[in-house]
Image (tube, rainbow, N blue to C red; front, side, top):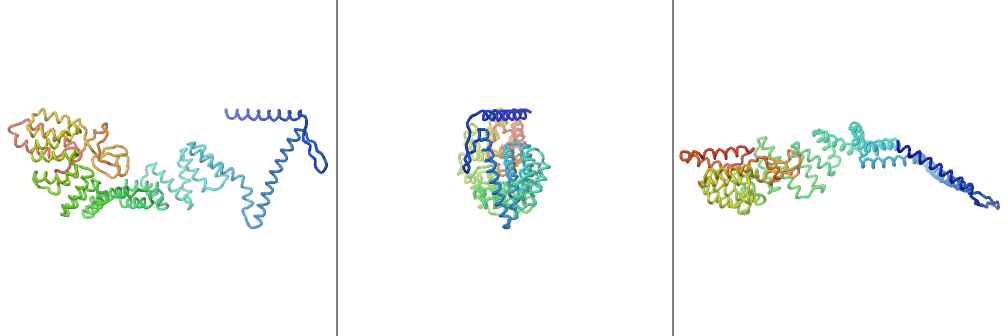
Length: 494
């Protein structure tokens, strides 16, 4: 309403201005004198202005006639579309202007305006290969998904726009949560344009979500060939996919293939902890303890982890505690000050019932980095050295409220996982799980790697020996066992 009023006011102002100008020219003196073939023509101010306007119009008509003459000559020379192009030129200009305005409206988030401009451009240009994409995206922006789907399907009929149509339908299916249909469309889009980076990423993500590890490795190789993925990142992610493939093979009861896939994953990325653990177990099953030791040592140097220690213990499952401590020193000598090394050696000393040495191994970890696991170890040391129940219970009480320590945390959404997985269960991101301490506000999630069965076993053995002498030991051991049983997974006994 306001805009209509403004237009009326502008029109009235223009008419008033022209009227005033014409009156001024009529009242002005002088004029323009033109001599043609010895004849003089005198024009007043108003007549001179009118003559100038007529001259400009005649010049424009002459130029149009010249263009028409050129088009006629081209037509006579065999150009069958020369005349149609001449008469359609103005319509095309308006159509391209509408197309340009539609693109700008789309970029500005004005869905309805973009839709109107798209319709106008389609009517004037008659070139659906140009206007259909704008129409589809404008329909999506304005919430008309049915129209968008209809236009995307039209794009499938043209070779030059087929990829755009498939991509549009794929994104629609992703938005609606139809993963299976989206995966098929992503495979089609990938076949049309294998080097398209967005299509590669979507296809890889969908293949990882659905467990198609073989297809995902092929897509990852295509990303490497197209130059959209650094070689070191490719090796790491290929190792993750190979490890996931090995897990599926293991679930299908094919241990030989599982061993080979796990060993391949470890070869591709030696610092990938789950791959090192699976490869080590594969070597142990093959009777190659030296290979298993080498794999675990290399992984431990990159990132000490309880699962690596459990796999290292499995190499010699029935060795004596003293022999186990000596063998583990070869594993931990590269990281003597790491918290995982200090807690591991303390646990081994507890298993050997050398509690003073366990205290020395633990050091000041309970002060510099107190966690549930380190405080529980300290409670076991106090119990082994004959400390009072009050002291032991005090350490256990601290352990209940202490941070859990490093866990498998998603780098993208910070969700905590009980065990490693190639895809985050929360945000579906691929290869984003890291062994790290979560934010304090998120440490409430329990994990199974903080408690080691050695502690429980050592205390249980001691409880059996001292049951008649100290009846109060049972409640303390029960507290430790209860705390450990709350964990979702149990590590192997080292």
